[in-house]
Length: 348
Image (cartoon, rainbow, N blue to C red):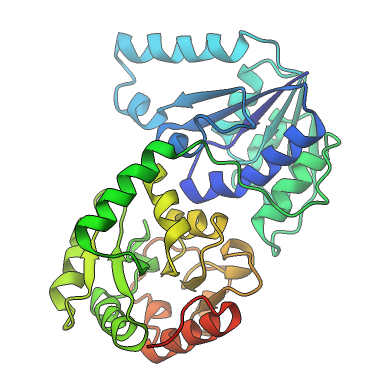
């Protein structure tokens, strides 16, 4: 049996679908398992022990160069790769027209997606042969597992995140941490993709000073592409000099998160990678809801302002985004609660 998994992006969404892939592999050890993903998130999948093949698309580049011969050659080559081994069933974890289109172009006889009310683009339901009703108020990992259960996968065990072998990245991170002298540290990630998810750099700087003063923890500041200015603003505003900027690849970040005593940041890919690594987390939430997109470990903490306009917001831009005006004292109190639960850090 050949099973196709379609989850194109984003990084956090791909991480949230990994437990479903692990469940499918456990239940069908002899099946061929292929995942189609966008280029940005591919590094967390390539080499995963539960996957036989990862087909990487770059649809953003294709759209920018739609009229070129090279684009059409690449697209045709990817289509041939999809059709090389006949697909028996495709699971669409994305709920978009393009993801449903991938399942259809692969020639899958059985194409399964979420119920219409849970689809980001409801018209894609016409590309499915079956739909699975899910509860959009529960964590997205649970809904992804329900999709896996639709083909008979056992989803009774705790979620697993089968990342690739990261031996090379472990050596790289060891060298980087030794260079900055940060063997005990918290990860501070100020990015968020959407401006409405951003906590002010000045507050992150004050938090870095507090972590150093209270726990002797340096703050390793990480960020995504195009977000270096946020990291530099934090470093410029810390009084203690306890923050260091440590750029990483996605795979290096996984290694970094495994070694961190804490992660603090908004609803973005690094938070979900850290959650998969079981890093203690305090998540800062504004336009998205932690019940669906938050860290899933019971001990983890999330903070946000309880204001009426947050409900089902999901706005990428806003005239005020006051939802992220979270007081520092609320964040530090959440960190203390998280440390108390895990006893991960002993106060100085």
